[in-house]
Length: 350
Image 1 (cartoon, rainbow, N blue to C red):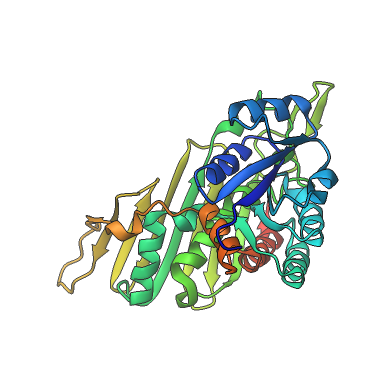
Image 2: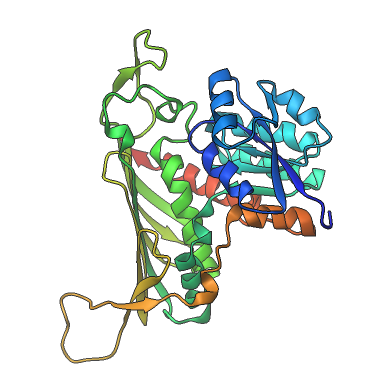
């Protein structure tokens, strides 16, 4: 595309759409030229909030896709719509960035990847945690062998908004609309993070067992007309093993205080990352000794400046369109994550 501005339409204007819109507005090579949502009030609010009142505002996805002056679409829509919306977008020749998880299952994800490849469009999935300075630094440490042979991957991701009983029966709480409840919601991030940081040193997730729970079984319907059953998992604890023998210990909950923390243990060293960790990580380097210290003593290690360059997934998506390259993570990464979500879900007891 050379120096041409990438013109983007954002479809679905729930909470996550704000991240998408701001991500494009932060990149001088992109311009949000269209917004689409079936809710007129949300459409007007988003346009006003983000200074996009001159953009195309429509409740018709087909109208947006038919516009030749739109190069790419961003899809922060509910999980069950990903498959159909992506297939329509690539059929129209649009580059596409889809929210995570890519699809409701691996079969759908595979169809989406094949369609995008056949259409020759740039495709990406919003699993953005691999762009954090800590994840990029740890990925390089692992690749360099700084941790030695890998032993454990541990990750805990939690949010708490849905723990409020007053939250109504939104799509995230329904198994036929939100991919495996909290497993797809938060687990997609963790599984992609594991692949990005450990790569071939771990391989794919090969086996798993899990326990999941729904803590509030009924909630008021969104329209206030009654109550309905919650079918999407609220929390899940997972034990797994990667192809190379690395053990996984994963916990995802929408009923715990907001928290993200992950660790990788290797034979020679361990790393620990809590929260955003944009400036430093914690590292423990083993040394032979006669006694055993009960508590490992981690030290703070600064993340080198080259990893703190402000790189984002949205910027990488735009860059791939401009240069004719590939985005990362793309639909192939989304397929891998979908397979692992299916594997865990099939092994889950409630």
